[in-house]
View 1 (spheres, rainbow, N blue to C red):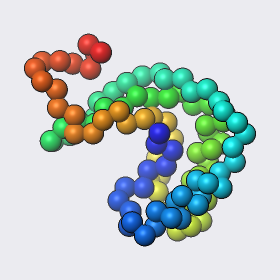
View 2: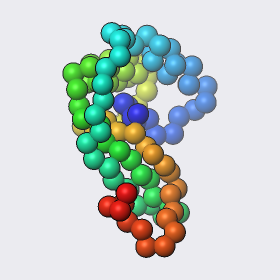
View 3: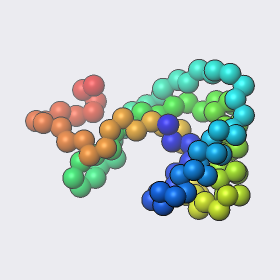
Length: 102
């Protein structure tokens, strides 16, 4: 699930990301609801994703992570939070299938 988008990062910085994630408040399980699916067209294969409805729990988690990651010196994209899960990268369909068929 994409809660913060880094782009490319150095391998040695992964430990800091893991620490921030482990420090995130967890008040138990919560439901997520999928609300849309889409494709981002890329040369060499598309990115397929499924969108998630915003919720209070998810928004609190996302805000916590972004604030802590910025304090740790990470540069994050500054765009509105749009929760989603990437289903596949470099996806190439055979034939004339369209996402609306799934």
